[in-house]
Every structure is written in C-alpha cells, then in structure tokens.
Length: 163
Image (cartoon, rainbow, N blue to C red):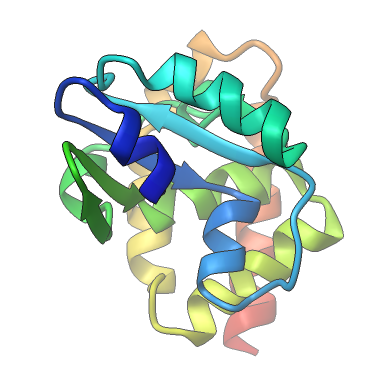
C-alpha cells in the first residue's frame, strides 16, 4: 500500500477484496493474489502495480465482488477505511458485497471467510439477507448466476450460522 501510494501521481481510492482483506484482518495467513478495485483510479498506479508484481513476485488482479454479483446499494459507504498512503485512500471493499460474492462462489475457503466476517461482527445476517434481496432484480444481468441456487446457498449459510 505504501509503495502504490508513493508512486501515485493523483489521488484515488483502491479497494482491497478477497484474500487481501482476509489477510489484513488476520483471517488467513497467506493469499494467492491481491484483488483490487480502483475508483477513482489514481494516476500512475498501473506502473507501480507492474513494478510491484515483478519486484515482489505478486499476483495483483483487477477483481471485485461487483464482477460476480450486482453492486449492492450503499457499498461505498460501507467500505471500511484501511488508511491513506500519500495520494491514495485504501479501503476494504464492502464486507457484505464480499460475503455475497463468496457465498455465490461457494468454495470452502470463501465460506470460511464469510463465517469469519460474521464472527468479527463485520456482517450481520439479517442485513446480509436484506441486501441480497435488494439485488434480486439485477441478477438477470449476471447470466452465470442461477438466482434460485444463489438464494438457496444464502439461506443455507444463514441457517448454519444461526443454528
């Protein structure tokens, strides 16, 4: 984060998501790649990313929950601040968006991450369900998602957590 901030020529925000969030929260001890979303994109950051990828042998991906599920209303306001490094503000991408995209994927590691979000008080189950319902009509724009299957996975997850 310090390196990206140092090399940015204009201000912007970088949202960390996935394994990077889990790593910073202490949920995991390692991650395969660092997933980010830039909005707005800081100037000069792609040059810094390229340098860091090569110098530190990192895999940095432009990936975020809104590539896999519709954007949740209010996601920016719920994105938790990590810190500001020079011109760049770093945030965790909204935990609810991360949780729903992870539930949709359904991998064991993803479900463990969402369980940890709940245990850390970062995700409330009733709010998770409310936000999932808020995107129901937009799921048509994501043909890879079977809406019935998605809501079944969500219901199963909530039941396991509440039980």
